[in-house]
Image (tube, rainbow, N blue to C red; front, side):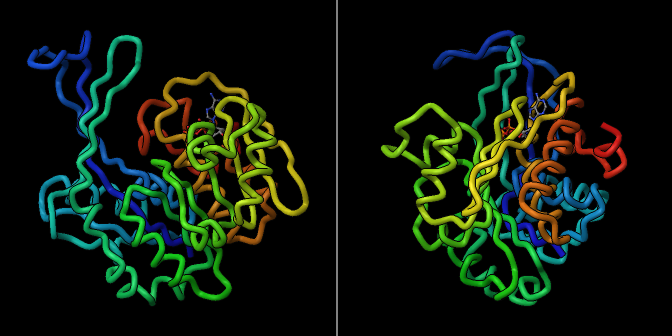
Length: 296
Ligand code: ADP
């Protein structure tokens, strides 16, 4: 099974002609509410592909929390690990301007209350999981507890988003660490001495992960391990909306690793899933079934 530990947010989206300045009010489009958050997105993406998936997350005892639970169940995710209460459901307030650029304010809410104790209380989920996938929209101490809770033969996949410096203990557990260009630069910090993604992958690997994947949007991805660095080709598609593509990529990769594929094989599959996800608007609404991913 795949265990996703992470965030669940309601995305509240309003189209605007332009963003308000301080003290100003602008009128926008009708409000659209979508289930989101990196953990919830990953779980839905994996389940839609056919993976047996469990989500460990926290939502509020409110309408947005119920929306998130409903969308997980509709995709086939096991929600036994979704805890309810402690704070309002996490929310992302998103404005989108006519050029498609967005500005986002996130209130972590219940995601910020997903505590190390919640991870310890879910020990049985960790024992039943071959792969555990996490991001950084939950407290870092909770991510550290995830690493400490891994079953001896299970694999840890981390997309450090939003990026911040990581303790050695977390880096050393990653197999792989999955970063896009921006995340690579933040995690590398002063060590980012090159503009070549191949170099980022090598330098990141030297920081301790067992393997590294750098995603490069329309350019596909790179995989790096002790066996060297190799390129994963992209799939040519007409991109409509790249929201949530990285989450779909990570979920697909984590699931395929759990079925025994090599990192290169799993990344090639994930690139198809990421490409399929950019051909439709939205995040969760854009995620393909296995048949749709294969048809690309
Ligand atoms: P993020 O969404 O985290 O910024 P990327 O933009 O690198 O991550 O996208 C993740 C993966 O999704 C890429 O590695 C690629 O496989 C796929 N992908 C993203 N954008 C495109 C695109 N325009 N065409 C084809 N595949 C894409």
